[in-house]
Length: 269
Image (cartoon, rainbow, N blue to C red):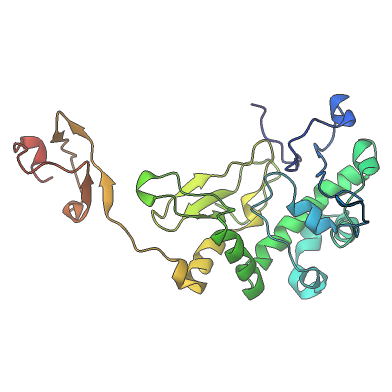
């Protein structure tokens, strides 16, 4: 597939592409979220959605939670971000605290909104990384965790344990080499996040979040299992030079039958 661009946003709508997309419009790829229409199914008018709600409903943005606008407006929570974001900080902040962009604005790639939108995405992500470390942010992410919105561990012996988003670095990478990962509390390993062609930086979640989450909510900490896949050839376990001394603490899988012959392959390392 195409390489993921740091400036690509795609919402969850799976319908046909818009006319602008069919014309090959450059700039940000933002397929509109059709559910955020100006009218409901019964024809009644709906309030205009906020930018934060719109952003979190974009496709592959299920990793994000909605940051409380009051948190965004508190300057104490924004320390250092103005210098990091640059000259478009004010416009980006105004966008985040405002309403969702309209179809007409997004359809015209020449409009300044696309440049501001890219900056707002980064600014929101960096604010989000701080918010998810607060009591309310952790609680918001716990709701998504229990709904398994972050995905499930692909490792067989983790039995689909729910994952948590994590960054391998705390600094935003404009070059796109710090993509968000997903962490499993059971095997304590990380896995690539499925974000399609949308680049989501790991700094939008940070290196601390999943571990603080586990400490804050000990009920989510799983009981470690000792299942470990053991490679065998004709039923004999392969000898691994330099095996750890606690190897026998693991429960081997597949299990060896009681009448299996002993072999030099089963000798301790």
